[in-house]
Amino acid sequence: MAIIACCLVVFGADINRFLRRYLAGRSFLLRTLIFVIVNAFGYGLIIIHLSPLLAQYMAKIPPHWLFVLVVTAFFAIGSWAQRNRQV
Image: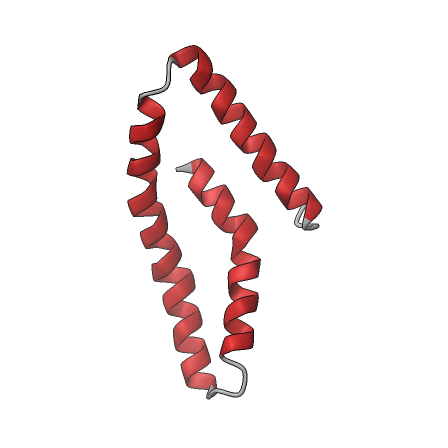
């Protein structure tokens, strides 16, 4: 779950930027409604649905490689965030 949440934190700014451009010129009410739906419900649903899938894939990995995978995944996410000036 932490890997999915970290990815959403890193990519959330890009998603919100895309929505801001797409909804430019629309009414305040529509922009606010879509923002709440995407951020509150959309990200929550992504975490709820993708976390079990990721856990299933990770359960198939041998334990000694799982540690390497998790550390590498967090390092990659952190590097991506650093490159995008989010850290």
